[in-house]
Structure formats: C-alpha cells, structure tokens
Image 1: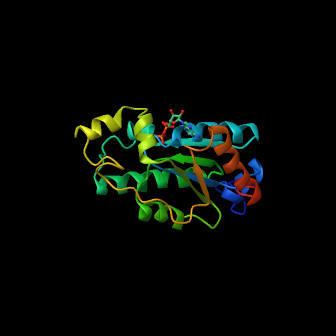
Image 2: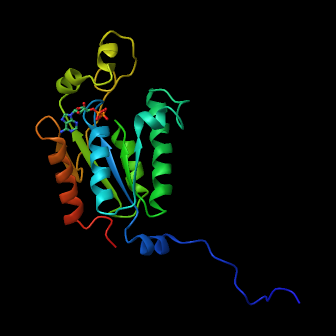
Image 3: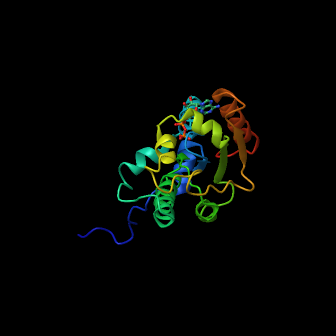
Length: 200
Ligand code: ADP
C-alpha cells in the first residue's frame, strides 16, 4: 500500500503562524544618520530594552555587515546603493520570520531607504533619524575616520566628501547631541508603544 494520496504534504510555516507564535509582527526599525551620530550605541540600547520586553529582536549593523556579507563593496554611490539593497533584503527576510530587525546604517540616500520602505507592508518600516550635527560627530570621531577623511585618506566620506540626505518624514527623530542615550531610546519606545508597532 502506498502513502494515501489524500494526506496533504506539510506546508511551509507562514509569517502569520510565526507571528501568532511569537506574538509580534515582523518589523524593521531603520536607524539612519552620520557616522558617529550614535546609531550603533542607540541600536544596542534599544535592542536591550526590547529584549527585556520579550521581543524577538536582532541588529544588523553597518560596520559588521560591511566586514562580512558586503566586504566586496566600497563607498561609491553605486556600491552604497547595493549595500542598502542587500541589507534591505536581509532585513526583510528576517522580518518575514517575525523578527523585529534593528538596522543601523548610515544609509545616506533617501531613495535607497525609501526603496526598502516601499517593499514593506504599511507600519512595518519605522525610520529613525539619528540626528547629530556634523561638528559634534567630528568632535566625537569615535573611529578616527573624520580625521582621515579630512586628510583626504578616505574618499566619499559621508558629510565630508559625500552627501547625506536626511529623512523628510521619519517616524522618529532623535537628537543625540541634546539627549542622553536613555532618553533617545525612551523616545523610540514611546513611539513604538503609541503606534502599536509590532504588536499583534
Ligand atoms: P554610529 O554608529 O552612528 O557611527 P556610534 O554609536 O558608533 O555612532 O558612536 C556614537 C558616539 O556618541 C558614542 O561614543 C556614544 O557614546 C556617543 N554618544 C553621546 N551621546 C549619545 C546619544 N544620545 N546617543 C548615541 N550616542 C551618543
């Protein structure tokens, strides 16, 4: 006797099933801003806060992704576009598995960020403008990159020799030169709570 033809083959686990299991909606929280503005710092603090709330959450950080997945890419406009395209695709894959994905990338071009937004369902792409004046970022110079860029040792450096296009209508706008890390995170959490982001 063969296997019954009426027995249905297992189906892939759907996004809905995962979201019901984990009690959250897959969402991308996209942090954009100049180098040194505070994206990495805020993303880690935000991840901790959401983890405490039992969210299934992870971070995709520019520096880490660039040293691995995207190590073949430079900083020309074309490569930056490809950088964001790939990271957008990875973030979407994770969001479709019900993850809350915090993305921390300079992502200087509006069009590239909007491309990711446009490929997500409404309410599942939250843009956070990590705003900090160039002078303050340069003063912080956490990675010593501004010094190098000023000496002409780095081409296409955002804010110095390559443009940064701030978001026009970000869901959240934090100012890291005026508020503490904790307060910036509270501001993001407040928005997420109020707008019921990723709540099922
Ligand atoms: P980015 O990831 O945007 O390049 P980093 O998070 O690596 O920036 O560096 C930001 C620096 O600014 C850190 O040294 C951090 O301690 C400092 N900083 C001061 N205030 C804030 C704040 N409110 N939010 C984030 N970072 C801050």
